[in-house]
Length: 495
Image 1 (tube, rainbow, N blue to C red):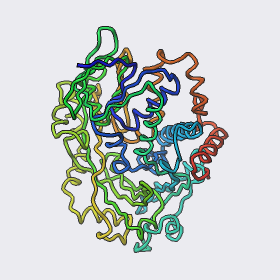
Image 2: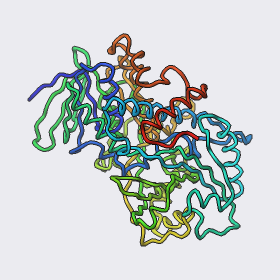
Image 3: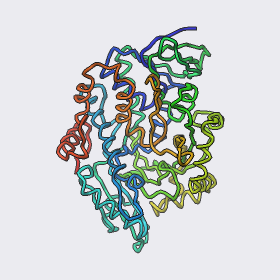
Image 4: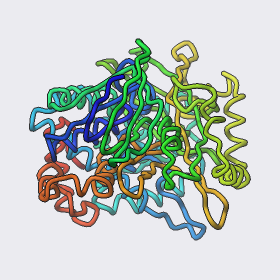
């Protein structure tokens, strides 16, 4: 049985591991890093272009990030958090393109307008107030609003063709949105890491066990799924970035900080159109309003996707249930994750989220006609013959204990780490990929601070010009940084 000794082990070959690994190598090139992935190549789960919407979440169009309070006020806090997080990703990619670590930006990022679109007077009033608040903030400079069918048709003609003119509509439009192929980006980042030794990738390799080492750090047991060979790895730090599979490995680690966490898997389906006569006429990511009780990943949207040079439209995702934590996982994943410590939180969440349960049941049993009716809310003239059904990525919504309620359903992404910072896991779902740099910075500060050079934060400032400052509070800084990144990445200039 072979033994490998490294400084850091990254589990999972998606955008999170690729981003964290790249940042670590930028700050301390001599680190010995090993990446383990159960599948034959990188970015085959949530980072795959066909498993996510590629929106480049910036809080531009996602209505669930700007909730309305009972008094009618709208909070921008969550939207601005995500907007600033995505900007850090743009700054990082800009730095890597300038340094030659990434190739042509067009291979992984394109300019695609972001829109919000609603039907009905009540929702239109909400969107109108949302736009008033957002357009006044420099982070959303250039955001337009219209209730005029001709203007909305100019932005996205498919939304209006065949629609009754008397139907109340409202839409916002931001030209500086993006479409990101996180799979292609992950591949480019890993290509760069492989050219920056000491760095090694092992694909088709499953982590079958992990335990603390007496010398500090962890000993991992892995299995080569082709040969069946078992290998041991001694590592100072373990990063669990394996999407939904990270929860299972966190539980195997036995760290006290992971107790009480559970997960609820949510699967998804897309309707997909690649007919050039249709797809070439839609150039926007158009987000609607979520059904009551639905998870954020199920907000309906009609999306331009640019994958491998081809123009597509996706609509969905339609939520469903599968007990797998990964598309390539096992039906035993969810039952196998149940523990005495997370049963109470799971039951409490089920009690407090009956609308979500009803929504998911309705989605699971929805007919093809019902799915297509939802598409026609966005695109009235859609024809079934142009669309095929495709399976989206598997997501795991995180559930954790709560002293007052028993348990809460955590939307978004959560970082959990051991008290000694030797193991860290990223749990949850959207907007994880878009916020990968911001999440990695949180991990650097909490788990790697003592392992990095004394001047690591000064080095970060060269990589991320806004590090230590805030673009949401400094309009000039925001304008300058976004203009620079737009030029390097080949994106539309900010409005």
